[in-house]
Length: 379
Ligand SMILES: Cc1cc2nc3c(=O)[nH]c(=O)nc-3n(C[C@H](O)[C@H](O)[C@H](O)COP(=O)(O)OP(=O)(O)OC[C@H]3O[C@@H](n4cnc5c(N)ncnc54)[C@H](O)[C@@H]3O)c2cc1C
Image 1 (tube, rainbow, N blue to C red):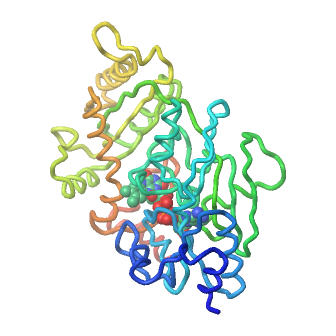
Image 2 (image 1 turned 180 degrees about the vertical axis):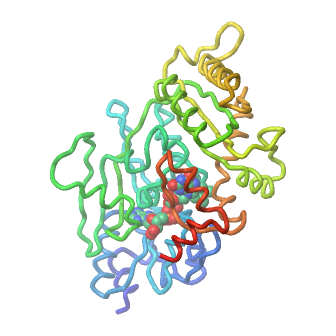
Image 3 (image 1 turned 180 degrees about the horizontal axis):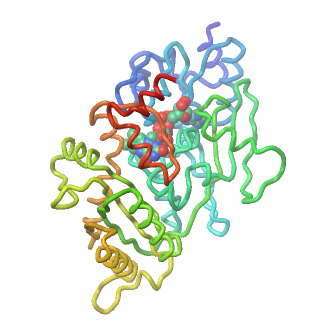
C-alpha cells in the first residue's frame, strides 16, 4: 500500500487532494515559490492530523504544514513531500468574555477571529496586511509581529495555550488559559516561531483585549530616527502607553509605494526622509466622547503634542486623519508593506529585528557600498 492509500484508509479519501486539485497549493502568496506536493492533506480533526503523522513518520515521508501560505519566504514549499493544510481546523471553539480568551483551531483566518472578538467588544490585537488569508497556525509558527507590535507584542505574547501534534503523531496538550503557568518546561514558547519543525499546531488559546473606543491616526515627518524615538517615548508617556502603531517609512518606501500604487497620494507635499505612521488608541470612554465642537479628545491630545513638537522643531510636518476614510488611507500605505517589499525591487528575504536605538546604524549598513556591510559579508 502507498502512503496515500494508508492515509486514505485512516482518515478517508475525501481529505486528500492530488493532481490539478492540489496544484493551487503549490503556490504561495508571492507566486515566486512553487512546488508540486505529492498530495495535499486536509484533516478536519486533531486525531486525523495525528493519524497522518504516524503513517508518514513510519514510512519516512516528509510532511510540510501549511496555513494561509502568506509567509514571504517560501517556507510552505512541499516538493516531493506531503502538504498538510490546517485550513479545515477552522472552528472558533470559544470566546470567553470574562476570561478574555479565544480558543480556536489552527485554521481560523485572522480576520475571522477579529470579527468574532469584535462581536463581544473585544479585539485580538495582532493585525497585518495578510489578515484575510493568514491563519492562526501560520501566525504562531512565524511568531508574526504585525503593525500593533509596539503595544501588544508579537504573536508569542498573545498566546496562552497550544495543542501540537508531534512528528510521530503524539498529541501534546498545552491548552492552558493561565497567564502564569509554571507547570513544567515552557514547551509552548519552543513551538511558537518554530515554523513547523517541532510539530503541527492544531489549536490555540489566545489573549483578547478590550476594544479601543476611538483612534487618532497620523503621518508625521521628523528629521532623524533619533527624533522619531523622542516622539515615540513622549507619546507613550502622554497617552499611558496608548500608542498602538508606530511604523517607520523611509523615503525609499514612500517612493516604491507610489510606483506600485500611483492612485495613493504622497503623505506630504514635500518629500521627507523619515516618515512615521502613528496610531494612538483611546481605551477610556472619556477620550472617545466628542466635545461640543465635534472633536475627539484622543485626536485633540495628539494634535496638541504634535503641534508643540512642531514648534520646537522635532516634528517637521504632520497630517492627522479627520475621518475613517483618511485613517484607512494612512493604514493602506502600511498594509501594502508585503507588496512593496516583494514587488518593489531587489529584496533580501529575511526577518530582521533591530533594537530601537540601533535602527539608524542598521540603515547605514544597508546603504549600497557601505564599508560595514561589506565587512559583514566577508566574515
Ligand atoms: C501582505 C502581507 C503582509 C504581511 N505583513 C506582516 C507583518 O506586518 N508582520 C509579520 O510579522 N509578518 C507579515 N507577513 C508575513 C507573515 O509571516 C504571514 O502573513 C503569516 O505569519 C503567516 O501565516 P500563514 O497562515 O500564511 O502561514 P504559512 O505561510 O502557511 O506558513 C508559515 C510557516 O509556518 C508553518 N506552519 C503553517 N501552519 C502551521 C501549523 N499549523 N503548525 C506548524 N507550522 C505551521 C509553515 O510550514 C511555514 O513554515 C505579511 C505577509 C503578507 C503577504
